[in-house]
Image (cartoon, rainbow, N blue to C red; front, side, top):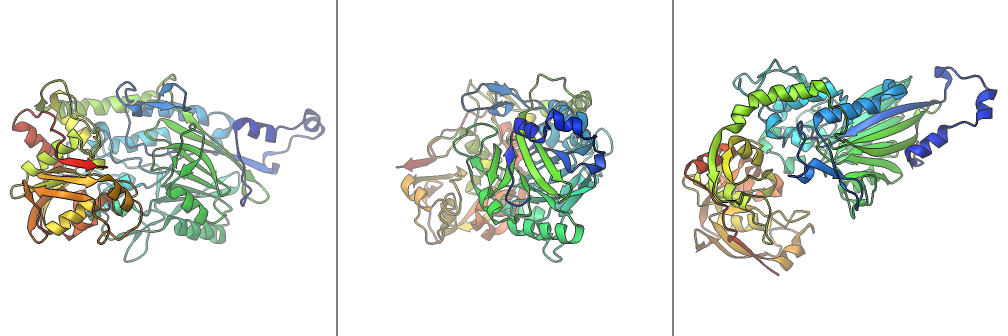
Length: 571
């Protein structure tokens, strides 16, 4: 079906296929292989991020969903509830033609229960849920390509018996990983299969799986060394043609870890999105019939360039229920209907998933509960930023990294690496881990003063939106109007206007020609989050894992929330 897709609601689909009673009585019921249409159900997920346990909606917005702008907060999520909702959605006549698919970030940036064990629990849960296909996302690469292949194929990390195969041998994924645009630089061979073909009552449907082309900008370069990430639309076009010409596939679905953002939000089944997905769909061949997307953690059901485009928010709080009608004559998609279903907690949770979670909680508990420090008073340390971009969590982490780096005079921390707050009182390892779940090592390097100025300029220049680094040992002021003028413009950063003034390190003005020893995590050291100047750092030396540095810092005494007095902003 080419550019004539109609995205229909459930009632419209029912009406479309209802026959008048007289007509139904006038003809004998056709045999299954004589029916013209074949109905296929896809259940779409994205950005699960190892969220096995239900989140408390009174503590975090990630524990609920708002169905409509003025609607109530609906408690949602939890792997055991997700499993039951999928079971119910698959029940009945559609089950034999049902497939569960994911648009990436199934693992990575995961909570303690999954991340402590290198996301083995999440893979096992998805096996039980019945996931069929997963397109890789950027977070699938958090521990590198070799570890991602272990997720798919199974096996234990032999030198980490407390972190891998702690309950039983890890057998890997029962579902397929897809990575059409992740290729070896030397051979062009894809990391995983570029696509999968499934047959429904004799009609083939092709599934092309991809991550965003910009993945190298937001993961550690060391983990993806030797691989290239190709343009999404060009890759989809290539494999759509291959599916048609070599395999006779007319019905084609793209599972893509890239998306858009609705503005304003008008409901979980609304559209009005902007962002990379719009351009990608517009550049993709009409042979692609449907896009199941992710990455932005947003809910939407769209029609872009005549094609349906869906996303199911994040953390297993929604499932997109998609119905494809395949024309038996053309063997192509005739109609598509889709709606996002809230994973409510008013159903009986899946007992097998609950037991899996309970078993891992037992082995995780003593590790997570170990006390590592104290935050005095009643105020915790949070990711909440002030107008300058500072947060107490960012400042704490940067201070810990600087303290763990003898010889360094400054430390810089990326805000996207700070994933949770820490409450006042006793601080546990579990809380520390939740705050920094990526396991990055600290890296010391030499930068000139001019390179540090460029580093700070790259907080805006080259970014689609500002990305303010947490700092330790550094103070400065930035100009809001100048920063806005270079954000999202594609301007040359070397010659762009500089928003930063009054830049001091150790209380002294920064000298462009002087060399400074600084500390960042390994993600930033490889140019992550588009801070490319850090790739130029000299005399590199690896150091502690970031969580170990934070634990060492807490061991030196109670840590009150740091003052937000390092960065100033002027209109």
